[in-house]
Amino acid sequence: MNRKNIFGVISLLIVGTVFGAVLVSGFGYVRPALADVRIGSDQPPVPTVNADVQAFNDAFVNVSEKVTPSIVQIRVISSTPTKTNDAFKFFFPFQDKESKPQDRESGGSGVIISQDGYILTNNHVVENATKVEVALHDKRQLVAEVIGTDPLTDLAVIKINTTNLPAAYLGNSDEIKVGQWVMAIGNPLSLSSTVTAGIVSATGRDISILRDKDGYGVESFIQTDAAINPGNSGGALVALNGAVIGINSAIATNGFSGSYIGYGFAIPINLAKSVAEDLIANGKVSRGYIGVRIEEVDSDLAKAVGLDKAKGVVVQDVVKDGAAASEDIKSGDVILKIDEREINQANELQAYVATKRAGDLVKLTIFRDGKEIKRSVKLKGREADNETTVLADNRKDSKKKDNDIVEKEFDSIGLTVKNLSKAEYDSYKVENGVIITSVKRFSKAEDQRLGRGVVITEADKKSIDSVKDFEKSIEAKKGKAILLKLVYSDGSTRLVGLDIPKE
Image (cartoon, rainbow, N blue to C red; front, side, top):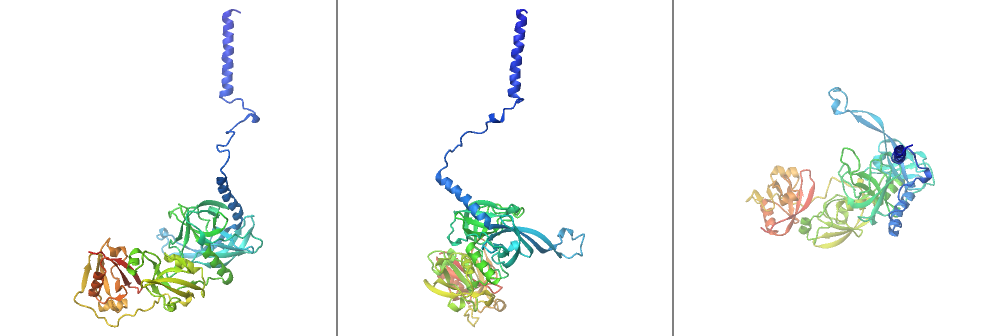
């Protein structure tokens, strides 16, 4: 073989070897043995977790393990009327809008509160229920009985017939702080035993979703950013020591999906405990009432009554024959404390009183005429009160009025008032006053929600009989604030502070 042929053979061998190596390594025709497979790094990025971080992480793990067995999944069959969709009216013009009740299935969560089977949940979870089933953490499914419901607080108690259940530890919701870590445990979207975490975003929230027929409510929700979705209702809001501090009840939603968009709301456990005890013992709630209508004190009202800053709640009306009426509580009083707890919002007072029962005694600290006074009030049941009748004012019998000025505009506060006609005296059932005929936009009067058709009967607790009287009162309070008593067309009254400019 000549040199040329030898060189050619060697070249072919080299090319074949290289090509074979490329095929084997580059195109994966030969797989490595399982023992030779190496994936991922050999060391974690942080070899040793900080002890504080590990303890913080372990707190969530421990709470999840300890509390989750106390949370149940609730399946409800309820009977509700169905309504004909308005879009089908054209095709079925004679069909009733509301048809026969139909069964529907829904669900929620619950918290075991006793070893012998009592479970706390939301009223809206079991409302109109014809059948209630409970799924326990150990996968048992049991039929439950509805013991009692309280729509005003959206709470309900149900019971299953078994024993030795893992009852949850119910904490003290008065001790929670904004910013503290919490966990929501429940069954959102039918996903059982789901745990989410977040912080307490706010306390004492009134979102105006729970009201009785008279507009009365006791909302004082805990707001959290722990994810809560449909199905979480009735589940637990839990502190990092494992204490249940709230019963999850509502979510902020965009109105279309009905899903969580950032905030959820829980009923404080102190209120829930009080309601649950009543429902278990009596099948209904026997909560106490003070018998007052109250509003938050703003800066103008605080200035008008002589407070150093806006605090407390002002008594707008006192219910006739109610608990407050018999203990020298008056319209215009500012309630600063109840049982030594500071009160700055109406729902704070209402929620605290809602934890009490008829017959309980509460102590009020009141600001009146420049000084603090104490009053003890024995709460009455609301059924004993006449909510629609308030204490009568000591109005003058005469309808005396100065006719020099019939109507006048007060530009500095954006208000025009006129003397009352005989028909208006009769219509509003007042013996004195002037009526607002117009309010300027963006004025001080509009800021304080004064409006056309409202009667002003008092200024700084003195009767107003005419426009002239009102003018004198305004002139005397320039650079200060004046306290006005208003009467509305429906007979309700309201006190409002109005800051009067110097010029």
